[in-house]
Length: 77
Image (cartoon, rainbow, N blue to C red; front, side, top):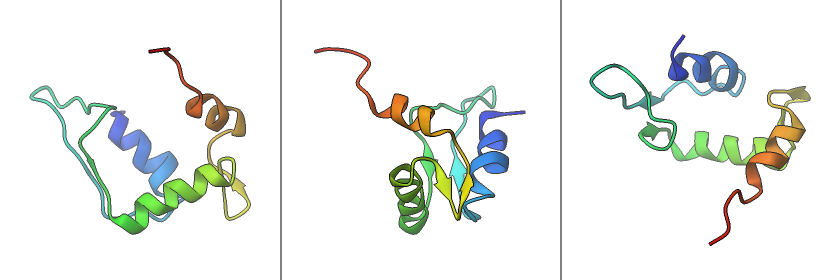
């Protein structure tokens, strides 16, 4: 399963994100760092998901621990 297909199944579908596109390279690999196109409304859904600790409509979509870990800096400049 590609990264994009995984995201559609486990993240976009529960958030009712239907209009998305994720660029891939010549080998069909999706870059996790950029190239994802979503509407402003759908980006706001991701923001709300984070603000709610990974919950969406009382369902845990991603773990609260993962949300917390993902927002902490990994490198010092």
